[in-house]
Length: 240
Image 1 (cartoon, rainbow, N blue to C red):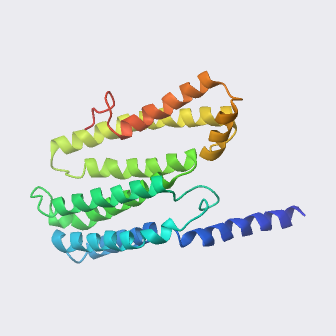
Image 2 (image 1 turned 30 degrees about the horizontal axis):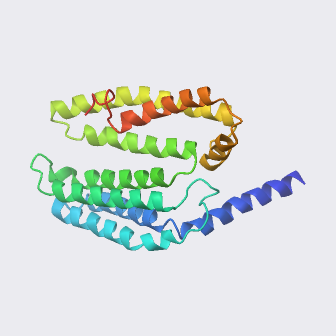
Image 3 (image 1 turned 90 degrees about the vertical axis):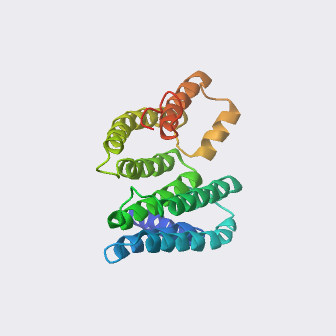
């Protein structure tokens, strides 16, 4: 009976993934273009060409966005959700990354030799930010933000011959590790209080009023401290 239950649970997870994939196409397309531009960078050493290829990937992801709007329930066993809030911020990500790619095409300090790796990192961080915007679970938010942070450490220190770039990358990494620990402690505090990391369940428990509001506020402040560092809000802005 235990074996049957386990097989049934695995089957439910696989079914959830298969049903969710069709609403996750923009992220999949961007991931594919990220891998492709990394490979193309080995043979093509012109950032204009590679940048244009990345813009094509962003355009493809934008065209697939209406498909993700049709999702009527949470994706991947409730870990992600496509609502108007997340879709808005995904579109912001497309706009900002597209502008960064356009600007970088004419940035003289940036070498054509490193263009493939640079554009790969930009598209990869875009996917991570899109997942963060759609996250419906605190642990999913943490994983997505950590992916954004790890890629950002490399991007901040990308100009290896620039002392300021190296300094910023080192400061970002050291302070980022501290901020991540604080945020993760806040998330663990939330789990201890509510018994779940699902945002919808936490919302329902807060509405019922059967939780310690003071302890919840402390946990929220810890999480906001970590997020403030990621957003470079004062006084967590030194790496910028």
